[in-house]
Image 1 (tube, rainbow, N blue to C red):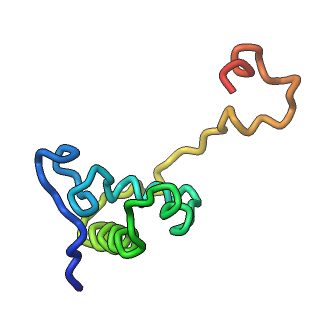
Image 2: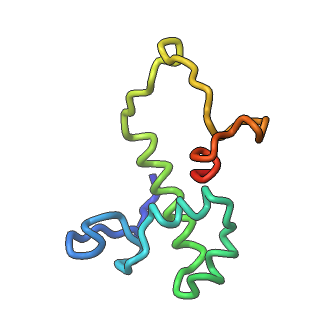
Length: 102
């Protein structure tokens, strides 16, 4: 794996989370923004102190961590199906309490 020289972790900065160049911008924030549909160019406009390589290294770091970590997933065959209250199609059947919570 190439060197990720822009990713830092220090206990005194953001509780030791992986950050960009020691500033209070976490890898998780970058990945979350990209996952929410923001583009690299939008992030660069929003955070002018970031550079394109900062964002690219954050994504590479997150991908590397995802591959290195073993995660136990639910067995889909043992999950029971539950109807979501948020997919009700008939508005007359939605109770007042549920309508307020939407």
